[in-house]
Length: 103
Ligand SMILES: Cc1cc2nc3c(=O)[nH]c(=O)nc-3n(C[C@H](O)[C@H](O)[C@H](O)COP(=O)(O)OP(=O)(O)OC[C@H]3O[C@@H](n4cnc5c(N)ncnc54)[C@H](O)[C@@H]3O)c2cc1C
Image (cartoon, rainbow, N blue to C red):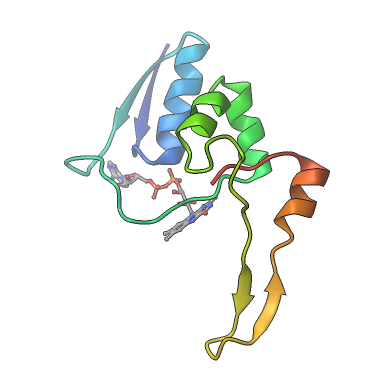
């Protein structure tokens, strides 16, 4: 079986890796000429870390992530334009309850 995947974003590339690991040939078609950093960071939350674990990618994502394997404190607040705090992200509590995330 051969799978054709349109788009080499996180979804397309992860799908291709997962399919290849179960023996399905997967070819990714990406319209962008090259894959490069766009200057944004990404937090990978617990549910995504668990999905990456299932396809054997969580270790490499953890070791290549900026947190160096969970050493950096993750967190933040959501504020109005004037700076008034609307809520804090209780990342520590979420990780305790659901499992680790990666920055
Ligand atoms: C600034 C920013 C910060 C974010 N931070 C987080 C975060 O911290 N945590 C988190 O979980 N999510 C975050 N997100 C959301 C996350 O980046 C997206 O949900 C995720 O990248 C979506 O992945 P995707 O593979 O579905 O789509 P995309 O990453 O959009 O990839 C789609 C790919 O398909 C290609 N494509 C489209 N049409 C075609 C075509 N016709 N032919 C060939 N190729 C095509 C595009 O060029 C693109 O490369 C953030 C998003 C932004 C913009």
